[in-house]
Image 1 (tube, rainbow, N blue to C red):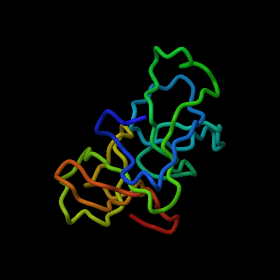
Image 2: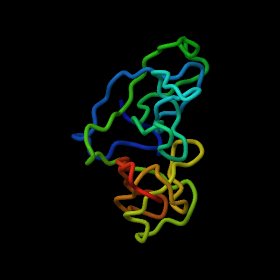
Image 3: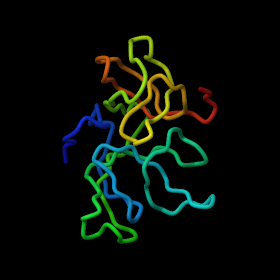
Length: 154
């Protein structure tokens, strides 16, 4: 399934696989959104949810949603529903991203930054533990990886 928007898109297909993954119930999500492990009351639920600003409290990046989840879907309120997700297979997996906030230049390459509040972009002006910028394409587009070691500080 191809991503029809400018959200996150796998950049090197050989380092990604597409598989069915369990998605959080009754949560609308757009194609290309970054997903993390859903945690409720310090416990994992087995579902994937929209990525927060950083990899925190075990809610680590898990993949990129490959199809939208809409409130009009037949299975929208179904617990355990499965949707296609692009899952990185190794640390070399890169994705195209869109800049959410901040001024993006070649100086940002190598920086660890946070996800935008909508989970579909990166805030390149905010250091964080969401993704590492690997390539500059334009003032609004680049490539990133999601391998953020636990020992890394922003």
